[in-house]
Length: 190
Image 1 (cartoon, rainbow, N blue to C red):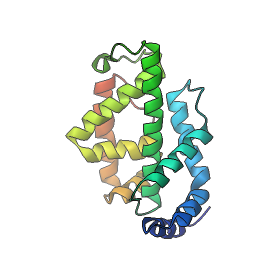
Image 2: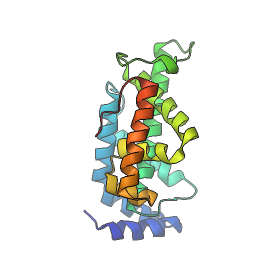
Image 3: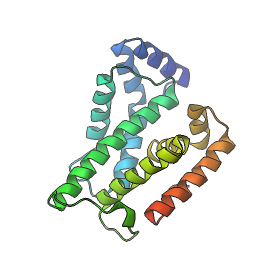
Image 4: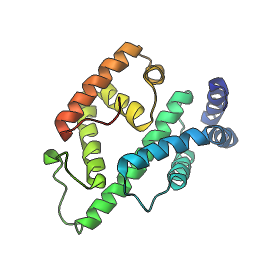
């Protein structure tokens, strides 16, 4: 595994337009990105048309196509990659849910129950709840993205957000309580 400083230097070069540096950074963090993708695929469950490799590679392609890579360091890079992966899975889940419903009626997101069997619908509901949370407090939504989707620790999340560990812990509790009130159940992460 590469030192965090090496990754940050490569990301700085990539921000300057050096695609070779981005390729090198991607190669060095590939295993960790696969871990993020595997965790997200487990959360979604039942996604038989997507593999970990497909999710990681599609995320990479989207990052490469981005006009400006805004990640400042290793933590930001993982957060950005996790967000891209989340959007990929969400688009897939929305497509799957629309096909299942015949593409006619919208999903009733406000009345979702814990017993809902379809994980694609749960993922869509979680995204809608996260969007509502972002409207109320963008940092709380960012904490959820970093902790739940990117799998960052409290310390890594604090570094990315430039806040204290204590603030991240408090924000995490608050965000989880909000999402619980919206979804009827808690996020399965401590």
